[in-house]
Amino acid sequence: MGSSVEDLQHERELILQEIRGLGTFRRGTVSATYRKCGKAQCWCAKEGEKGHGPQYLWNGTAGGKSYARNLHIGPEVEKYVEETERYRRFIELCEKLVEVNEKISDRTSVRQVEDEKELEELKKKLRRKLLRKRERR
Image 1 (cartoon, rainbow, N blue to C red):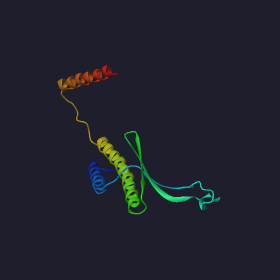
Image 2: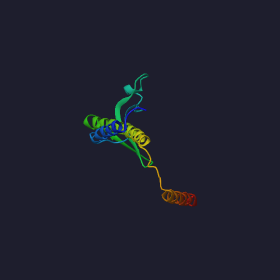
Image 3: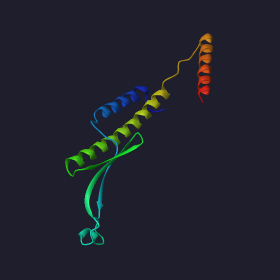
Image 4: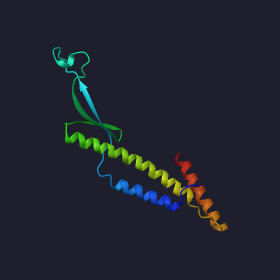
């Protein structure tokens, strides 16, 4: 079946330690763009030229709203690139954490109900819960 519950719990702890050690991060991406200024006599107007640049832009989305920010070349660009990379690592670690937790859950047994009275109470409770869920729809 693979790893024991203890091994999986140890793996989960390692993932959590790595998440704690990530530092600051931000969602989004950093992109470099080049653009032509539109002046006919400028060097950027020649065929095959990329244009002026690079100009760095950070884009991100939060709560369904898009955000953008022009970045200054140098430390600011480096900071944003590192933070967005750490965010991608954070997302990967969260996915791994969910997978490990699901494996732990699959390997831990469900308590067996042996008392008939307790079993009937659990059935009633479950029925009430399902009925309330249906009524909300």
